[in-house]
Image (cartoon, rainbow, N blue to C red):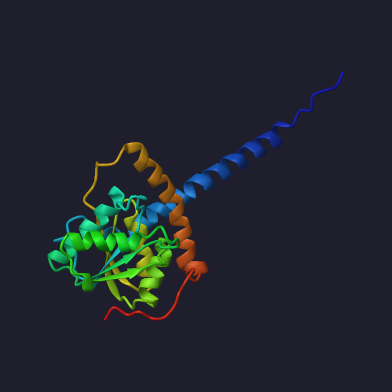
Length: 224
């Protein structure tokens, strides 16, 4: 008969304790970093366009555009908030930054078209076709478009990371949240918020340690 191997109690306890510590670090550290970023930007984020401090430019981050050329609801909300900020004089120019990595997919031109339909003059709007991530959009806004101060516009769950990233990359940034709370299904918003917790850790790594170059840089296209 084969005897079953039994680990001493002390070894089993060390293994359990080590596993628990690992789980706590895996879950607790990202949550802690997320809370830190929320705290660090708390006095720089606004919901009311009339309360946000005036800046030179509004930076509007891209999101999904459907194949029929329609903006996703979240992206449409971002553009509308930028249009409102421009309409009441909080900004004088708008930078649309997003993904145009494929010939048949163009977030920023679609965003511009919608803003023009809402009354913004075409010459006010500038396009960044290589804003493939929040980090790359902020990096290129500073280095390619010469933006020194900006209102960054996105949904509330994403706003702390957007403000923090732009600020760490040399832009005097404040954030304006889109006016669309309670519109989206709770399950979808939970998935976005969970993803954001881990994206926050990567953002901190990028701005404080790695400082990677964007996928594309290119020549200076200042918005003066």
